[in-house]
Amino acid sequence: MRSLGQGGIGALVSFVGQVRDINDGSSVSSLTLEHYPEMTKKALEKIEGEAKSRWDLIDTCIIHRVGTLHAQDQIVLVLVASAHRGDAFSACEFIMDYLKTSAPFWKKEATSQGERWVEAKLSDDVAKERWQK
Amino acid sequence: MHIKVLYFARIKEAVNYSTEDIQLPDDVQTITALKNYLSLRGDTWADLFNGKQTVRAAINHELVDNLAIIHAGDEVAFFPPVTGG
Image 1 (cartoon, rainbow over the protein chains, first blue to last red):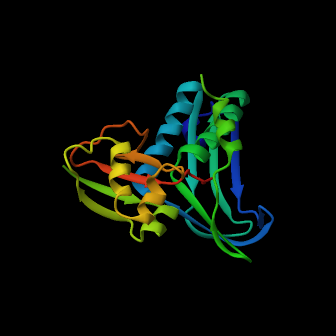
Image 2: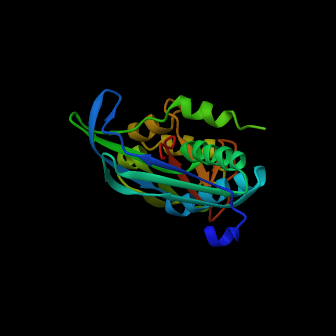
Image 3: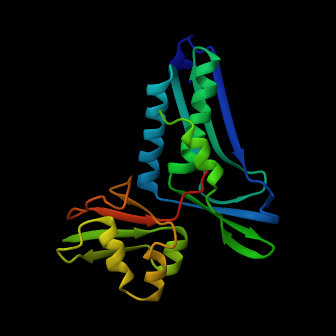
């Protein structure tokens, strides 16, 4: 990314999502992420493309892990490079809000009460809606 | 027409497999029609596709709504609301 910017990058914003050890009142020992590989790739590229059309960005990068993860493991990384911080901050939030609601990943938690699929949150839909033009 | 159908997450667990090829009757042309058609397979299927649960659909890797038209050779996927990130 640094080389792509050729000196023009003034802001590099990163977001790292981590596995929490508690969710909905239960302790979580591990988390398994399933996804839809062909659609995941397209969905993430579409989100990055939309971010680049809305803000003046030099480059973006999304890395999302799948499989079994444990507490404090890193799940997702979003990097956004731009000339000025405003574009990079906004685009990073936009990418995460869209990733949470339109990229085909599903989490299953292992808790002391057994395994359960994580339910989608209304607050994530609300977070996405604020970006509607 | 002939299509491929994929299931993910809790839906895959409920139906007990992840993919199948289906020969659709001529009158099944939309996502809604396909959901109704699958509901006829029995209680498990009816519970999934009778509208009480939120089931998202994709055609050829793009999210679509219930009115989307299915074409021969399409890859249709059914899954719960996503929970990544």
